[in-house]
Length: 242
Ligand code: GLP
Image (cartoon, rainbow, N blue to C red; front, side):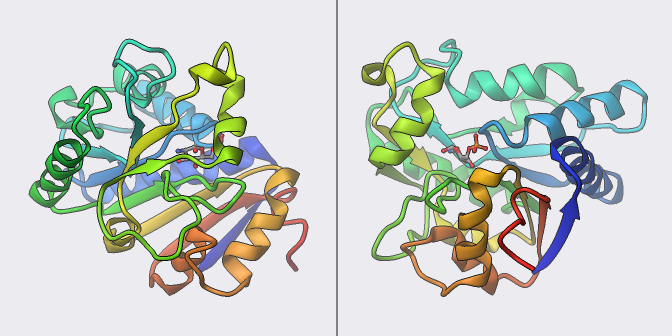
């Protein structure tokens, strides 16, 4: 695991974007595994700038996103479909037909998850998987559990995740209680993984996940077993590690 220390959020965003753009330059038809949450927003903005400057071409790129809320329409501004369009897809020349997320509008969980597993298999998995880090160590929406989930599944979001997401909704009742997420097994099959972390509120989980024991109680701890992980974190997030 390689840890890159960034000065602050902007520095973290630029460094992460440069790693993603290097991937696209080296393999223009790569599969990018993408993430939502507030942490990667700056990196997406930087990728958009690089595209606008003519430095980056997404025309052959395929994307697979980590997760999606179950029950939100695509037009809902809190759906991850909406988020990805807002922050990246509508601003670069990616082929929308080649951008994939779990279908949150599919009420049949087995079908939604089966279909998404098939899509991931068809595109051949991610060359580079971008990840944020939840306060409880979740990756995608893989919450602390007794075992690591292999493939896409429907999860009941934990109390702490629902609370953390509340700020995006009018009231806590509107926060979805379930989501479809790529499994830890699929994440671990990505050829390369890039984790972005920012802020003092993530310092403890950075320490637990990357320097503590490997356990499904801290889902991100499994990344210690992957052979090609880069963590780009700012000084605040790294404040509890040497
Ligand atoms: C959500 C997403 C995760 C993300 C996490 C952290 O739960 N499903 O993929 O990593 O939030 O979000 P933030 O970056 O806003 O702290």
